[in-house]
Amino acid sequence: MSAQSSFAEAARADGRAALVTAVGGEHVGERLLVRADGGREGTLGDAELDAEAVAHANELMWAERSELRGDLFVDVTAPAPRLLIFGAVEYANHLAHLARVTGWRPYVIDPRAQFATRERFPDAVDVVVAWPGNALEQLGGIDRATYLAVLTHDPKIDDEVLTLALGAEPAYIGAMGSKRAQAERRERLLAAGVAEADLARISAPVGLDLGALSAEEVALSIMAELVAVRYGRDGGRLSQRGGGKIH
Image (cartoon, rainbow, N blue to C red; front, side, top):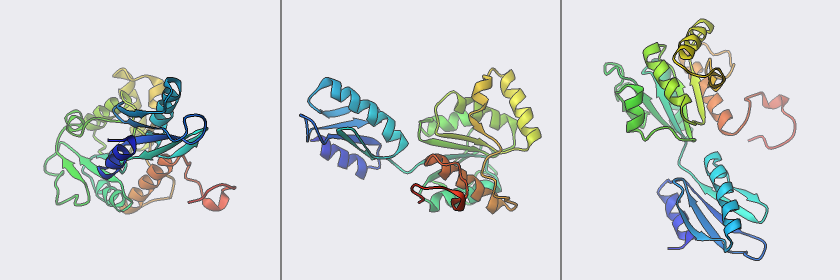
């Protein structure tokens, strides 16, 4: 099977891969497929050029965008972003709904079986009744395209999630909580051995400043931040934005 055919198959299977095509230079037309697990198919006809292509592919397939890089065009296919929502609370229901209608894949996770039910979270891809470590194992771990929203307000759950997340490289870590709750969480995580610099990776309180009051509005503020992070934006008002692409 050619690299082009394998790329098309990966796209049909909702996989993650990048097809690098030489569009200039002496190797024009040659293709190299790079998969998320490091596998490759094809070659651009030069080992140094292949290495350059792999570097670009590994960056862009996780950034989920296709780009022209010099004489190389990197075409990317990726599944919908995965959102892991910890805490079977009311906010989680609305957040799962917003995530699903905007094309994301939301999962709700909570060890409390009386709350974590399919009936309460019909928009979730799955509702996992397990402690964070076991749940992440069931879901295949955390990769660079995983977004986490921690909403439980229960230190036993929150601290485990955040410690595991900070030991990986997710796209985003967000945690709900007041200033007091954040300060207490910070002290607990530091005492547990989390580095001070790593704590800055947690977006807390989670969400954009929309002035949200209701559970639905809070979910909207969280979803808005997730979309902004995905596309490298700060979530400011478009009316105050300068030039460049808007939508």
